[in-house]
Image (cartoon, rainbow, N blue to C red):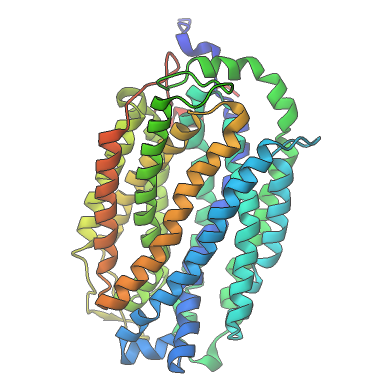
Length: 481
């Protein structure tokens, strides 16, 4: 039987091209997974030596409270990186909007940022191994600066060549590609546990244990950028799909049409501010978990750091399921209620985490405790919930601008997220210092998620895209090229 033509048949997502754009996200999440999993623990160990004259492993055995005392310093360094990103992301977004070269407006920034960051990244563990905090922090700053040159243009590339009603569908595909990048880093963390290095005496510490993940991340970042460059011809694609982009503007899920010659409408501005405000809060919550979970597992649960990597894998698998199903939910309920549902699911997971503590059951020769299995379930629930949030939030922001301002509005999105990630490590580090309670981590994050849910649900309107349906289930992974 011949398939009946649907109203949306005029706009079809090019899934092959979208997956190739996803190589940019592959490199981004690969680097961030290594960075977030290793660097906070590097900083904890090196500050423990500066403040107490011994390694963090020795402190863990004698006075765990002192580890909490150095977390505010860890938070400041992590926040300084994010502060630089907060400044640079909008700059590179605006610059790339106005750039015109034979290879496109985003690609020059993607290639330059990738190659410089990839070259500098492996020096972070080398400086740490030799107890050179200045070299380590400076190198972290260089990596972050050039990754910001890469990140905004790479993220803006998807909406550049995807009509508005199809962007939630496209975002699911590229996020799945990104999580494959994170999975590479996670597997390395399982086979090369950071806790084996941290808990070893100084004479037994081998730099290659912590160097390999950084080297692999750099090599794969370069490969992913080259694949992107060879397969995505920005200028040619933009010319080919001009009519599709114009049709996407007409069908956009916005209250009032976008007009570059007029100031942004009051309704659209209110929608943008409400989304960004809620985004700020949920990134504060999520980044707190991401920044401190490695230390939480090693110093509070007294378990192997490889368990953190297993958490990451489980959360990543759940996220992939979330990205694949978010479009179906958004098609039926709208993006607003998809995000609100994701925040509610995440809140329940974090509340459950508040009641999880060390098992006290010693396993292995290092005296580490067995890992509380309930946290695996928490990470699955949280991973799925936050995938619903991330899948729909970025498309909602760039829905409110024309194709001429995608880099600028991508900058708005990242201004909210990076300012949250600038504030939250310092704020939570100070809370740790004041309370000396590791359980403050899930309490802090659950409260912020609840506030985010309330703000988003009350102030954001639910407007569905006209005629063109969002992705349905695993439909994101098949269909026409």
